Amino acid sequence: MPNDAIINSGPYEVGRLRRRRDRRVAEYLFRRSIRTSNPEPEMSACRLIKLLLYLTIFYVVLGAFATGLVLLLIEHHILPDMPGSKKFPGLASAPGKPVGDEKQIVWSPRNEKELGIIRREMSHVMDPYGLIGMKRMMGCNLDDSWGYMTSRPCILLKITQALGFQAVTYDDALTLPDYAPDELFDYVVGLGTEDRLNRIWLSCQVMEPGLNIQFDYVPDRFFDAVELFTSGNVFLNESSDNDGGTYKEDPRYRRIIGVQLSNIPPNRNIKIHCKAWAKNIPLYMVTIKFLVRLAAPVHPTTPLVLDEWYE
Image (cartoon, rainbow, N blue to C red; front, top):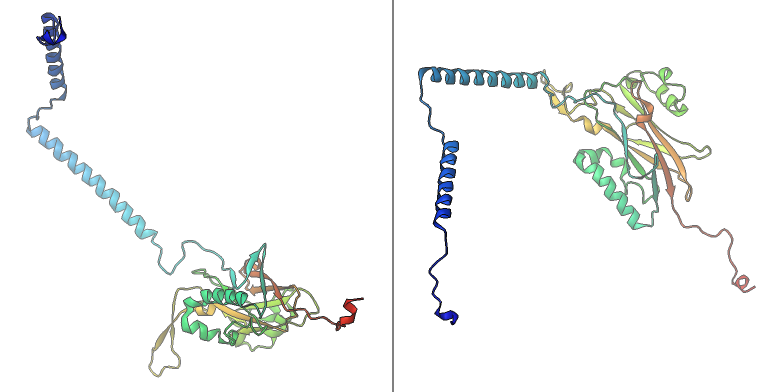
């Protein structure tokens, strides 16, 4: 018989097996409806009292927790002009490339690339100080290259911010430690009594004897320690004709000093140590070591005769 002549009458099923399947499906649907059904409970007076009591306790505990947090924030609130933790100030410098525990400053007045790198580094340091900072450091930048084009390089030294720190200064040359440089001792001795008070002294010295390198400090050789480590000060304007006249002062301008070097011998590694001096500042935290080298072309000491080249 050909397959096209066969007519399907539907799927073959046994009636007894179908009835069992239908019964199992019905039982499963019944059990599932019992598990998932959640009829709304009746709202009685007792149930309402329990609900109100629960909400009352919950909000009381939540309010007490929030109040405790607010009190802790108020108690331990840090003012904007106060530090989170006490720390000592340090000493930073520019320009220079850190190598080990020292900063190397190597340049040539004829190398425009090196001069450009130094200008950008110094501008990056001085830009936040604006025109006031540039005016304060004018003596270091007379050639618009911070002295590096005229072989009188300037090094910027900045005592870092330490909010709330009170420096204890050496107000007399006799109180300076024995290991302080002699020229710093002579400088302090030559000042009047009022000019010695509240000064964090700065000294730079060449570690190799026999070199007559001069150091000029711009604008001064000290950091004025009066309210130095604050975010801003309000002082009485003593020159004002009005009683009680005041003016605002930004102490960050007093935290930077320029040190200009002169009489630098060319093509020679020169080690220089710069230190800030205060009684309660560890000396190692305010000490910077430099290696300075002025690269210059080397000229022959004796003239060469052309005939000697062929001998």
